[in-house]
Image 1 (cartoon, rainbow, N blue to C red):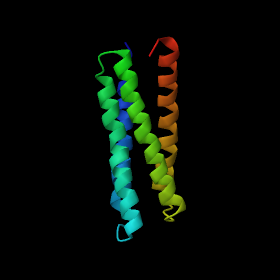
Image 2 (cartoon, rainbow, N blue to C red):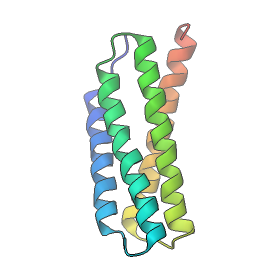
Image 3 (tube, rainbow, N blue to C red):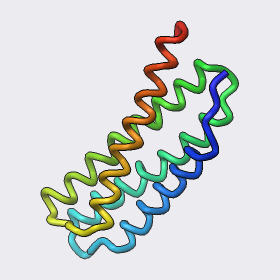
Length: 122
């Protein structure tokens, strides 16, 4: 059965922490920024929660299902980041790094799910 490495558990937790730090920095006096920031806070921290759930999966099928949830939350997070950047003009190194890390996590976990599905009948 597949397991999530400790490195990926730590990385997704760092990702959630980075989302929290970005949220704290956002100018929430702007309603649109507040709404998008809150959405990002929810989905970005869920990435780490799904990683934790995946690491405790009892079967490859359950593991893959938890990673699918992680991918949905990461993809949603990418959307909120892009909207904050493009439509709200939030531009700084923190959000740029978060955007890059989101893309990297999406690539890593997409590859894991794809390999699992090719390996078995999930």
